[in-house]
Image (tube, rainbow, N blue to C red; front, side, top):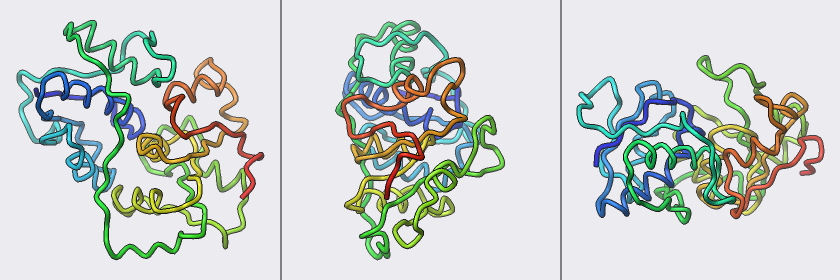
Length: 241
């Protein structure tokens, strides 16, 4: 099965599709060939990370291939949830497939992101909290602030390790997974990847996010995070490290 996702080049919104892709792979009884937007090159190692997933056979960028015959996968549709613990965005991808293709498949809510253990990483974070703040990138959605955790928690820097997004996704996810402490993040892609690893994650919000897109911040949380994994929503000034 060849699937193309061209509705987003945001890491978190894209990651919400992975349990659906895994479910489609189980439905089709073989791994998926995937086409993603060329803009996703900005996420260092995105192809390598996706190819680690058993449900994915091949990954190409949309500006490198001709996508004739690909099944389009999008979240630009209804928000109905068949499972209250399933993120709304994941349900939207599910609804798109059901409404447009009629596949009788099951979302793989047991999907857990696979990462390749990397030898030689200096885990200076062993006894520190890992912080994955919002990325200050030139193409970021600037309706939300960056440095939400840094400015809100004002942490003791001897107790934390701030992720460097110039490093590969695999490197940073190894850092997150190997830390014995909860991962500290906000509404950003790396936090959703941590949720898909079933890593204990504190998702911070500030006053700018109290209401977002006409909804309270609690709705934004259930929109992107599983309700039965290990992520929890915490007001940033209530975080104690």
